Figure 1 (cartoon, rainbow, N blue to C red):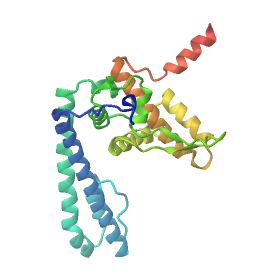
Figure 2: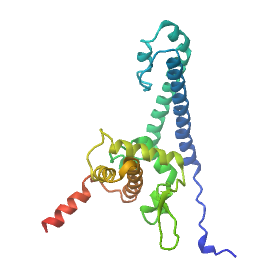
Figure 3: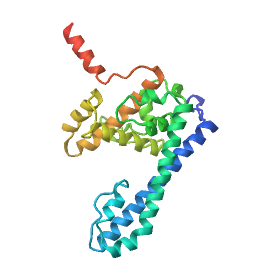
Figure 4: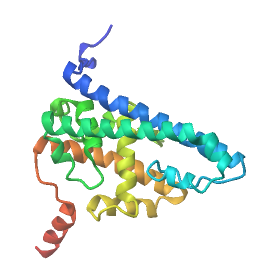
Length: 247
């Protein structure tokens, strides 16, 4: 016997959202291919006894100018293919910007958070599609697979690793944004302060756990901004504490 109350309806993505999400996934495939080719170029250079320092595609050709003539000749077609992929990726970036501005102007609400760009905001919106599918914004973190699991055994309730359920690509983008927020170039905010404080008391793997926790908080924050349409206040919690202390 099955209790119908335990079953949840499956929400199918619309054809329009699926088509736009396909553009993002195609770009992701090119990025993976470019990364693989860059790693091949660096590996071949190292095996030849030289170094191709850095892996940024923007200055890869400039770095290759310092290589020997034989190595530049051997890697020439490979570097040209990397440059071609970079050009295709730039074209996809322009298409994604156009899609966001024309069809999803709500991405501007999500981009208020420093560290969240058009790609992250649009992928977030297309993956969830309906912001009202969750009764609480906290459910967005669970949907992205960033919620720690739990195992109940008698009186013991140890906290386990995150579930990693849901869309892996969206989860990876949220983690990348969390890296930027907690990184050296991240803008000061309550979210950054909370993540850095968590990293300090997290022990050996404190920074990794703080990044995942910040990504989960970011997923909740983005959903809240999307639903409410409010202006993002980076120091909302701090200002409330100050007001309470003054009262």
